[in-house]
Amino acid sequence: MEKKIIVLGIGNQLMMDDGIGIYLIEQLSKRNRTTNISFLIGESDIDYCMEQIMDASLVIIVDAVCSGDTPGKLTVYPLSDLHQHHELDISPHNFHLFQLLYLQKESIKGFLIGVEPSEIRFNIGLSTSLIEKWETILQDVSDTIEELIVGYEVDKK
Image (cartoon, rainbow, N blue to C red; front, side, top):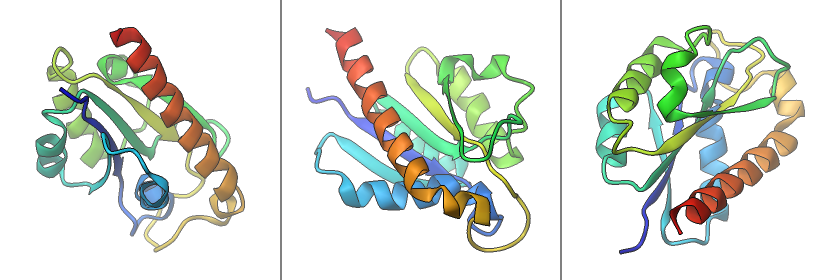
């Protein structure tokens, strides 16, 4: 049976950099040539997200994560460890998703790729800071996804 890998962008495009996961998945899905990888946009619909990822072999979530680092910097968190990161200022709509994923940690394996935002406030579009770093962020996320998938496949052999 072929492994089903889901790369899920979550966030809110009406709240500036909170939408970074959605913007990234929109671009990465256009580049995808692999049939067992699905790039999905979940926005903040927890029920839809859970429905999509329940039968996945590997889940990679891309989202804005406020950890106090430099805007645009990536941090990777195993989904099974998210409960340990109470210091993360994860937005309320995402917090519930991560709670559900923690409860499913035995059956759902995966990672959160957090992109440090610059501004989260009501406005459409990314902040100037992230727009200036867009190509680097896009390439870094693409490379990180590839590394996580390769690492997962090596571990499964």
